[in-house]
Image (cartoon, rainbow, N blue to C red):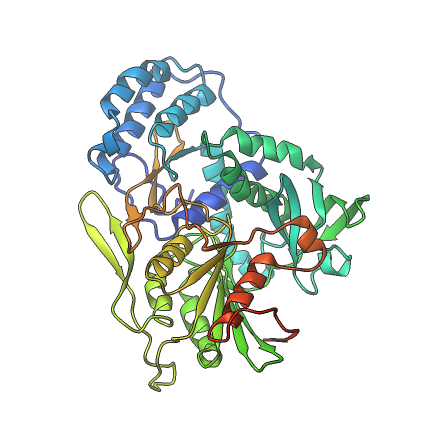
Length: 479
């Protein structure tokens, strides 16, 4: 079987993965989507101890802090290795490994069952051939969020099957493809770190639900919903290819990149741009540059990073250059052997060679619990530089770059190899980017067609240099 280069057997050093959070998301959603993981009745003699030793050593040798942040890693081995050696089966062994990794207290340390990884590899092999037809990434056009302990429709793609069937924002999803949402929530909750339950649910419930929504183009998915009148109904929605540009990167499955912008014109003549970036893949550089040709002369810009799980960290430096004209850094990446800065590269030349200047007006960033990794690096860095004001909800707090390495039992070990701190020295891991203005979505707001985070960002931008006041009616000009 073709094996992506970031999946290696022990003894083969894996390369640094450019898009770890996307890999984690894909593996996790695939694990939930394929049903129960099969397990052998018992492990071959010695395999439990051998697998434990391999995982323990990988963490010891690659952790960004040689002192393991004060954790006695040898004592962890002495305590847990006998349980791994005595594990009766794969699931027992994974439980011990998960406990070992949990002692670290960071994200991007996890065991990925072999079956989940193999499903991912199969999807990888087929994805390039099926990209033009939508492959297995088609969906009904519903954006989901975990709001007030419910899975809520937070957005509908215009013209999508959900839109044509009249599904509205604020509706509650009760079951997907026959699986109750409560069952998905229980699965996600079981893996939540202590003290991080709600943040974990806000990130992973929408992702696991999305995996259930996604399938082959032309197939249908059944949804049980509660509408705006709190009446329950069941709909069969067709799956269609998602919006955006199909992007391939290395051996990863085809992803969809969306870079959308529009201009909002107020009655007082003030014009504000709204730019949305779905992921940090290389094609976004040209798409953002093209959008900035129109947005650069406006009175303010909102950059919407909600739902953006990350991508290539280096892209944050280039895109940051559209908004910062002086020498600055988004933060510092620290590995065991090196300290890497994230300098911003001011964008002073347009695609056609013209001399331009970075946008100097007020900048608002909108984030949510699905804003992760490179998006957190960008948002935390711009906030730390006092270049942007952040609106919405705390981000995922999963900013660590990671590797995926093979283990002797066939499972994979996800392990972080670097730490990140913002320009003011603050650590994003576990904490996330904390908005300057908290503006969480509510079901009532969604039912009324309002977007609290975007509204708050707009109000702030409109108040710049003219004093606070009630917003005037606005006209939206889509692009």
